[in-house]
Image (cartoon, rainbow, N blue to C red; front, side):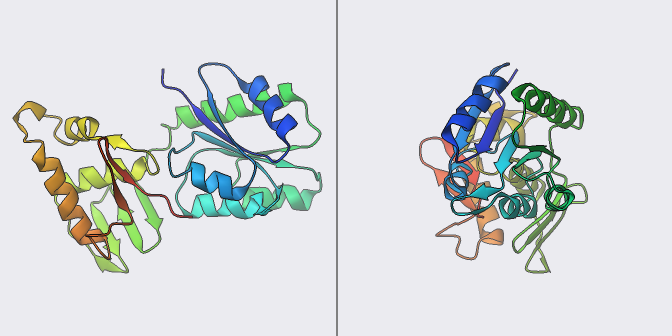
Length: 232
């Protein structure tokens, strides 16, 4: 069973630590962040399986950050922590893309039950596999093999489309070359020259990047592999 990553965006250190202790089970890994700036930096290295967001933060609103996550096609469950129990705040959280909310002060047992329910639902629905998405200038419809940049159609080979799907659906995560090779050429990696991956990446960049020699989307992680960079 793979480790689940939970990002907690909460500037109250004691409360954040308490939530980590209450939710710790089943190999869960926590990414504590005290500000939106820290959370955005954390997303450059991993794509969380669940978000817990406070609303009032030192550098902005958790509601605005929630909306940004959804706009950038993050499908992982989001739970909002709010100090207000007014109907307006609850509706605002849900309208900005949150899946659930908990009002402070709250029971850690109740929080755990809510989080467990969100994770069960996400796993039952297939873990957030991306079939179609819009991000910045791009529109990717993997089910129909239709790809656009700035409203213009982009023709991709089957290999390029597989590569894009793997990178984009794991955005923020570095995918090792070995995994990319085995999943893109699943029918026979032993017959594929490792240089084929570098060629596929170069061709994909030439079609998607504004400056392929200085890529901003498909980044190389030296000695490891590639990742689709997250920009918020």
